[in-house]
Image (cartoon, rainbow, N blue to C red; front, top):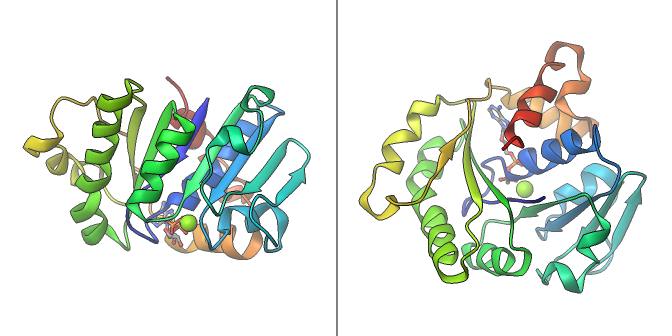
Length: 215
Ligand SMILES: Nc1ncnc2c1ncn2[C@@H]1O[C@H](COP(=O)(O)OP(=O)(O)O)[C@@H](O)[C@H]1O
Ligand SMILES: [Mg+2]
């Protein structure tokens, strides 16, 4: 499966999802490729604890390999996708870059986060990302399952956005709302480089992320 985490806004939870989806896959599979398409390389740094030095730099971490795809090249130019059980891509916020990577990776699943701290802006701009996904699906015939993931906001906050006329006709899904974990999530990813479920009080979050991947 190829999973792409995207939204045309920064700080909304793309890397949070990418890291934890990768971790949930790691619990059951041994050949996972992660592709970091953001100049900031947060996804890469979570695993390597260092900055990548050059485009296509690869970090090998046991079950998980991470490639920094700063130039957003198509997957086939980076690796042999068939050698992996699953591939997870983390995007930056430029809409055009997501267009390139949707075309270059043909994802099966697109995850679009909206978190509490960026809620108003992220919801306002959500239709831009979704419109692009729908347009590309129509153009290419590859229609990825697309799930909007509320991070610390109720799922009902997303529903009115999906009622907009220009978004009709695509089977958008809304994931169950994740509890508000703003500070613990930030500490886990950017300070401790741990999955949130590695803290005993959030052990049940592994199930939350595993369920996101279930068809
Ligand atoms: N469940 C959650 N509830 C509330 N806030 C969250 C949750 N998960 C993540 N966040 C917040 O989202 C912030 C931005 O996340 P990040 O994944 O770095 O965004 P992006 O990759 O889109 O720039 C994190 O610092 C964290 O505080
Ligand atoms: Mg990020």
